[in-house]
Length: 293
Image 1 (spheres, one colour):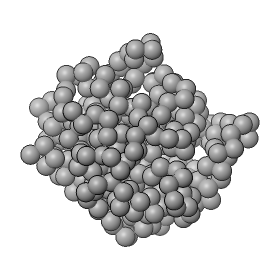
Image 2 (cartoon, rainbow, N blue to C red):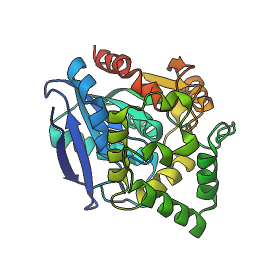
Image 3 (tube, one colour):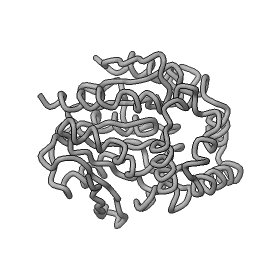
Image 4 (cartoon, rainbow, N blue to C red):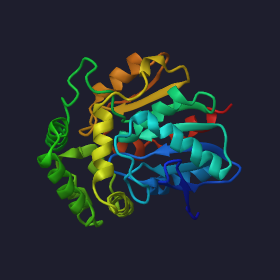
């Protein structure tokens, strides 16, 4: 099934790049990629989109792939981009799903676009920073160091991101798992077959094709006020998380699940950051399809 690439212009003149997969008469799902990532994530959901009758739209956030950077963006700023993209492809009501760094952006749609968004799914998504728990506890050392530098800012942080982006820009199926080092748990490593390594290497190369600033702006958006309060979300929210996650520890899922009113919890103790989605795509897709009933 071919992926359709599209671009739409923002009011500030910048471009939003997106891809869509799945049947044109399917129920609309907006997919928010991780950090770093791009709209190529749609490829990972193509098979379940077809099987469950979903029309999946993925957008590259500003600064990633072919989307123009918007310096100082907040998490909530994604809502305007989503609405523009939906209008461009002629869609209206949608479910919002975000993986990892996409989780907060999925929640933003439920909080700030209740008119069109039927609900949000956070898959191993991060919680806001500074809300009463140790945000980096349980993360692998690579993430602990990244966010330490992100809080400090300055040349050392920028150099670290530039170095990481350069390495990701050379990702191959043979080296992509090694590039993530301790961030991948045993549960995650168990699901990486050759096809998985191939698409993931393509995804991260695409993400940093234009440099490291999208990565930078995601980090800063997570650590700053998001532009909405998760405790005020009224649309249905489902929180998926696993205990073997070394990128986004389960404490984030626990906080989100206990803070967002009426949140449905999908706690999978044996899953990591990648395996959570790799092993449960069909279950997640079925929930998304049912959200419109």
